[in-house]
Length: 91
Image (cartoon, rainbow, N blue to C red; front, side):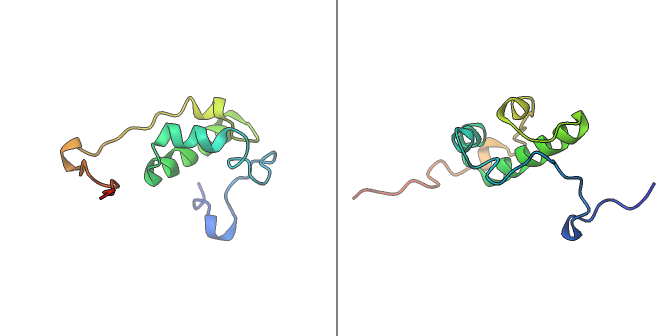
């Protein structure tokens, strides 16, 4: 068993049908926001897990149908969240 791929050097497997804006065109941006609620950590997890799932299945791109199979688990206790975070006053 060799060393794991070094993504900085470009050693990671490639999705050959993944074109520019694969995740940034059509309905995908809205889908990603809906799935993650705009939380960057969830978005990162969804994309990474979707990529791994595509590689495992021998697929060459990531699409909404594939991302539907990815489960995002929020391990953060709800009591640690600020209910007013991101809310600005209009006054």
